[in-house]
Image (cartoon, rainbow, N blue to C red; front, top):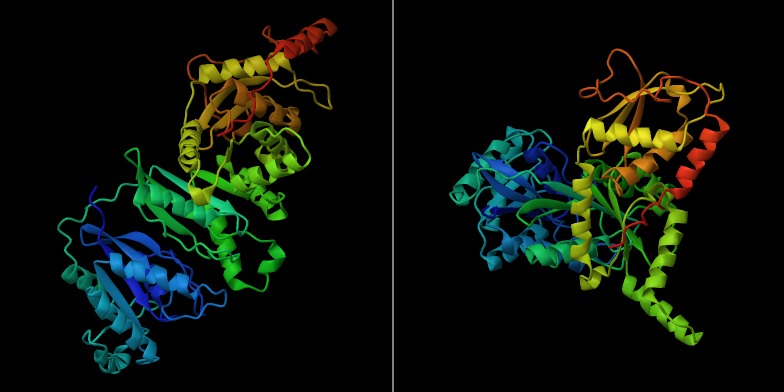
Length: 507
């Protein structure tokens, strides 16, 4: 597919750049807050102009003095956007009038020698258009007066893009991404570093997002689109998660946190980044629980593994003990199994994002999980697995009555969703359902992804199986007697002879 022409939105802080991008696209892409300096990274999205697509890119406020000493980083991102842009939409504030900062940006654009269209935002009516003439002093003609909030004159921006950008080679269609991957974790775990490592490999853009030692550098969720193995993938960089009590008095962190949650919901696979040099924290556990509740396939990515290995090797030398990287990985996996019980099925990857080490392996793992989560099996195979599970261990109930499972069927993928149609759903308690899900992972092609199990009574609205794939449990003869001592002993022997479940995968 041809590359998309780039149209970058630039301007000083708080002139409404993010509001304008959201208004043009028709949905919330960038965080909008009535304070300067909210946007820091380049936030981009495909935008249809006529019958062709461009890449519309939001940027931070030029000239903003950032309290976290990220001013130079933000400026660098804006200049990258200007350099790569086919057209710049230079946004000024109609209500504030011409400022020295506007003149500074105009001078920079002239040195970049990039096509520029001047847009005066917050021109809410025709009366406001009377004040547009003073902006002609910037050297880009009289601006187009628009209002992002009122949706006023937005069609004029599209006309300006068509006039100034050669759209002949722009694609008429943008392929839907085959997979969305959300990278989540607490602050300073290395999420943006991992995104840049991926962008370096596939897009030759090592500075796609701002990376800093300052916690909380990323505020918005940034989509990075790239091609891998002839497939379109999107990696979503998200803001770092903090303890909720820190978000009560900070609107930006509140919105950033909910953007991170939304990114998890819209992702096909989640990469949960954990700083290997620190203990698993409360935000890590909260994230793990939320990922589990959303039934999202997840790779647990241990970052900064080179530092972990270096520290462990030094400690072993000081204590004159033998050092084994494999043993250290095993110990780390056992630790994660204890701390993140919700995700005990998830594969683990050990990486060093700053060096790009194992980055491609992590992406391969994400694609593997995506394929697992989208696999559909036959009802016959599923019912054979259910029959085997019931043979191994029968559920018990307080009333002493046994359940009768008529059949099982898979009704959905991503996550694989299995419906058991039974005589009484109360006879299958949560403990037994967890046992069934764990055995499904061993018997079905879903060893590393979440499985949703639904228990339904037989009757109207329940799906019917294919052909004659009825289970008719608990006993093959249709009786509902309790198993005898001999049959219970036989069942225990079966369980004892069953091979141990496979070890959690390692990448």
